[in-house]
Image 1: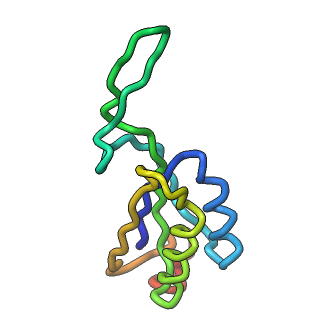
Image 2 (image 1 turned 90 degrees about the horizontal axis):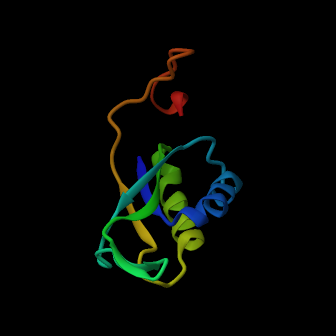
Length: 110
């Protein structure tokens, strides 16, 4: 399982890049968080205020082990702007997967 937090405006580019390499599905959630930038300040109608949590998109993608490095590389290349707040990627092992509709398990379920 690959979990990636990326900038919201990069979502379509990342989705297209993943589709091109054969990723057939992913889950996307709107999230808020902060990392090294610890939020920032903005000015709205002349008043300055702190934005402690920055909007991000969380992608959850489960692929076979053989495709994992390619997926991480595609996300990294596509989501990178070179500026602070580009996001993070985590790779975890999945013990099992099951497709509810068909009963397929593990790699067949992906």
